Length: 292
Image (cartoon, rainbow, N blue to C red):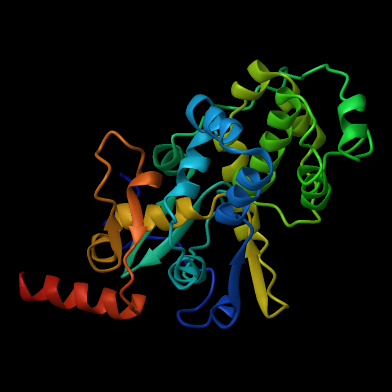
């Protein structure tokens, strides 16, 4: 994955070394896939889950949920706290062991396999969503939030298969693609696409999700005791495994049941060993110096 530069001529740090205000805050995210799949299976069964998992571009997120991926907030916090000051709003550059490393849409696309094509401004779905929105208890001029979707998930057993599937896709957008807070709403234009399978599948969900993730990084709350990342944050941790060898060697773990044909998002998990990222980098530097 070509995301690192060996040059020492790089932009200034966003924060002085060791002085990032984010270091003292807890890092959280909303992409709680395991909780979500339990809800789908409990209320809708496996048929819809398997249908989307095997036939939709967002199925990769349901496959990820089945891997019991282990999240490491401390590692991602290190990436965020060591950002470089760059003018590119849709990229993250961070300094890892004295080496600038990039996390951009290119890396995100390679890791997730999601469609990251440019957004077509002319691809506007004209469809009457008001009846279905009324069924899920959402006002016609806005997209649903988690709480509204959860309430319907518990009472939709008598719905048609198509409507149950649309409800599930809305959940996937909210939790897996955009990783929104439970009170936040899916943008209406994106939410309506669940009513037209072709329109839904041609959406660049990878690009939408990546933009949500990067935006949440850029506006991380510096005033509170915590900050929350949006989007599929697991992709950022896998990016670390893919481009930082010492992290992959000491902290990552390739799943034994997959091969190289599987996207990186589904290949990696966290080994259960405890580690301090800074210590790993010092070990890597020491080993490199010894072999010069």
